[in-house]
Length: 196
Image 1 (cartoon, rainbow, N blue to C red):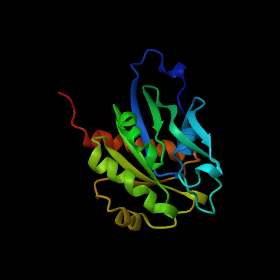
Image 2 (spheres, rainbow, N blue to C red):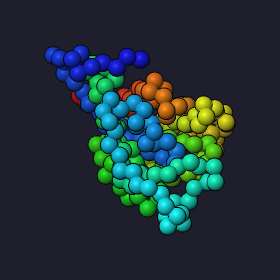
Image 3 (tube, rainbow, N blue to C red):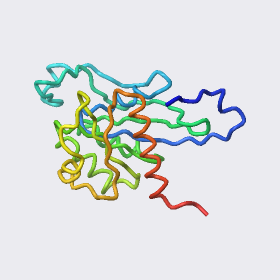
Image 4 (cartoon, rainbow, N blue to C red):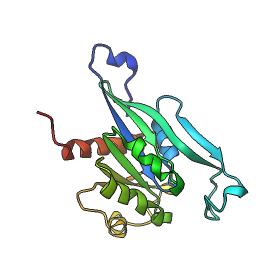
């Protein structure tokens, strides 16, 4: 997928949209934003230390050394007349109160899921189902390029309504991430009433 340059937009009316990338701690939100952003992504990463281990516990297999403490921000042009602003949420419970502010004005959201720690995804799905009016999709991050559980099993485990799109994404891959963002926007357009 070739991304248009700003020169391609000359003379066009450009539409911009805010997309929130949410999910549990360590599911790949920062990676997803960075993989597709055409500007150096803005992030608020802090080093993880032993002192914070009781607050932000990691599995023994995790190589994670930093964590988002406010948000990630990126920008991507999906078409000459379509510009997306991406806002990645922090995943830790102590930062969940920030989600309302990050979601304000959003056109859509991508809830990123890691099937190796599916329980970390329940709060994000619950937030968008019950506490937000932002249309959302769920994207299963393909860690190591593998789908470890079928999408049907993931949908069942998350008790996800059939009307919510469920897709796979490799958060490291620009094309895969762009495809997921297009799915999110398409879902938003299908579920949001048009203005007269």
